[in-house]
Length: 445
Image (cartoon, rainbow, N blue to C red; front, side, top):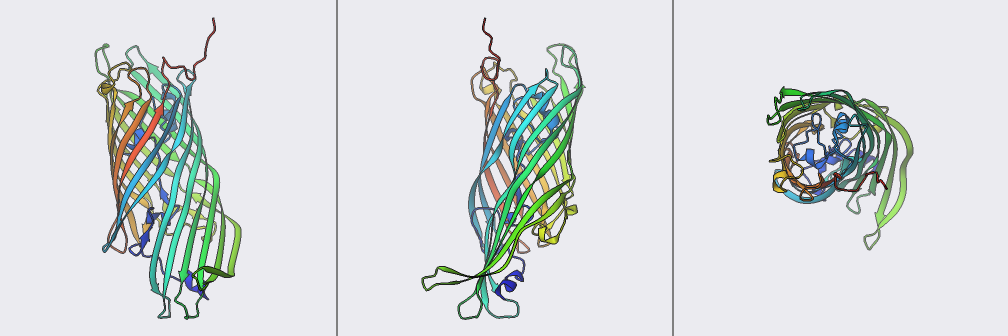
């Protein structure tokens, strides 16, 4: 009876009893989508469809891989401080998250590029408590909801230059295509417990659900670069544009689900004493059909600055599940985002002054997220900025990335929470240059 009562509890109210350091919104859907990008692109608001960087593997569009200057290794992490506020209270939390590892390798005389990465896709980390009455009974019970886990992706991609024409002054065009083939994997664990006052005839009850996800994914990319203003001589400043398209392909993802419902009591010293397993379902198999996701962007740039805009959307409301038992928690909504970003470097000379070779970056993003909570679609706004600092005075393109991302999502009305956060962004990009010995074939005379 207690197990049935627990399953009939109304949807949790986020404004009550949020604990822990994670986002309570990770309780819904597949968790909080990380949207992990290399630090250079994160500091530009998340631009990715129409971006090329000779010292960064832009995995958001695999068509960019052939533009890598040399073999490039990247990693990054974020230290996030957040404030969660309801209409009556607030709480502060902190998390440190790895943004992924990537390795980009150009080959084929600039016609090909290979990308390898391990990236976080979503994270689940929440703890919620509330005290409410049992339906049809005046007894108050304490309900606790918690979750942990997330999804990751191992990625292998390639890009190819279909057509390229350049004169001695770098005027011309380039058309490239690319594809990423990934393997999505991870688990999401959620727990619900109900504890009742003693002497009321109810046993404490817990429901533990585990979802395991493993299956391939694929996404495609295209980029076209052309001239806006041609160079007439070597002293001229050319002006160029880059247009990009990306597509996250619809995929059927296999899932396995386990759920167990236990009842328990308490000893005189307050320790939990297991009583019975009221329900068990093990290793049930189902699948999700992920919807199509599209992105389009354009950037304008010269040797010193880049300015770009991008639009992304994915029809999450069209997600299909083989059985309602495998449906993600909460309601999914169609997501979309508008991004604007820019970068500036005083000098593009590899052997120039260290201070003149620092790349300054900034960006903004406004989005409707993929979740509806209490009938309200989550909205978010983000501003980011930072710089890429060369690691050596004049012999390498390797750099240290440091920046900050400021954001807000959610609302304090309708029983929801407003989440504000500031994330310290740290990353490193290691790219051997001409005077370094890494990845170079040695000759013996």
